Image 1: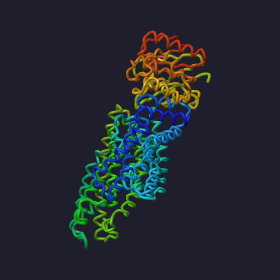
Image 2 (image 1 turned 90 degrees about the vertical axis):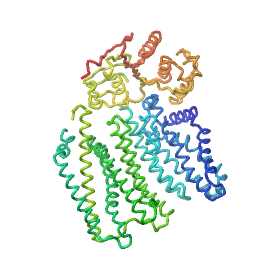
Image 3 (image 1 turned 90 degrees about the horizontal axis):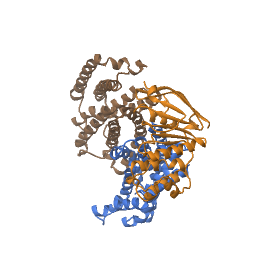
Image 4 (image 1 turned 45 degrees about the horizontal axis):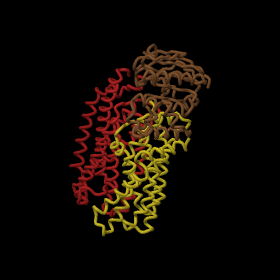
Length: 208
Length: 234
Length: 198
């Protein structure tokens, strides 16, 4: 059942405009805004890039806030999913994996490919990518948990963002520091656990 | 059941609210007298540090109110008493107001101390994020028209926000030690003289009374509103 | 599952009691037809049996682990992605149910072959309704909960749908169906929810 849900979500992402090409292009376009707004000669390029990676990831997830659970809720597909022989925990885990693959994996793959254009050394690139990998699970989980609670709110992406962004700040703070992947993993773990409760609760509420 | 939802302390509020408010005002005047006239100026910061008597109580209460919201959310999950969700809903704007006051006074205090209206000091930054946590909670209540649903979701959000406060505090402190020169990271003095402690305590009491009065007025209004919406069932 | 039993069900939404003291028993091979005025709680009752809402009072037997999972609930929402094509919508369901489906066969049964590559958005309500009942045939479940599925269907398709329902109960299925207009359906049990309203 877990596999069904995961494959179905990935297929839906592939059909709709949130596949690898869309998310990847979106992310690259966000990052190439930097050279236009700051002096490319300076050391600043590197540090702004390192920060903007996380902003780009956050933006990709925030723009997905009207999709995770919400679209299935609106059109009635969630009725079908909830009436299958599958527990809320499995629904959550499959959602976590599908959201991560759809919105985070493209960014984790693209960052090492474009980092040299922003003066990052190989060492720094490795650190940034590991950080991104460890932190992105928690950020995806946060987006899922909040959206499970708020899926009934249509076209409320700003409200949802206002709720989610403060929860992203710790990830941002540690994300830009080299070698802070253990902290990021811990943060992700907390977020994954808390979001699993929030998601089960949200799914239970939704029928009422 | 009725007494659970209509406790006497809220039902009879109209009777004692004027008394409570006048007591609050008197305490404020006494507190202001002690903090502005009776207490000495600071050795280093001079008179500008007197803003502490407003800044510190509001900062304390802004954190305390979020704790109260989280507690009422937890107990709402256990008892399902609508009054508990009304408590969270009444407290949130008060907490946001205290947080805003702490931010503004912190910023005013920063001007003579740091020479700038805003520094990315760990406390002020955490306070700013706390303000947005309050805002998110309030906006959530506003956006959901079905208040039964809203109370269920707001309770969950209150708890999620509360879990995040120590995490945010920890990360911001860590970020601050890394990126900021240590000289400007301390706002309040570590040890405090008795002559300054007395006005601070009186002001804290005044703020506390103010909080209680506002809270009772708001929850009274909201409980009446709920009763009207539910056609006088409670 | 041989039967579905409801004992003294009550439904309270907010502070309004929608219906109360509703009891019935449907066995395999039977159709329960729920009628009633707008707002009499037809959808609430079906969602309660589907397990989306907990009964305010009373109970549903077999207990929830049996009935609440693996039922077909066809609600007033079509469960279709409106900016995807008919074929892609069917393939999403086939992924969800992990069933190989013969798309062409299903579409010709539903008389929708020519719309295979059209977005669902361009279909009429009746056509969407036809497509939305396709999942009854993709995946088999012991109970069908059909919430006003006759709405938007023309008389020819109402007859066809009834035919599907008779076939299903002849194979031992249980059907609970609601309607707010008169439909020609030979049901075994009729409940008018208006009688249970408060």
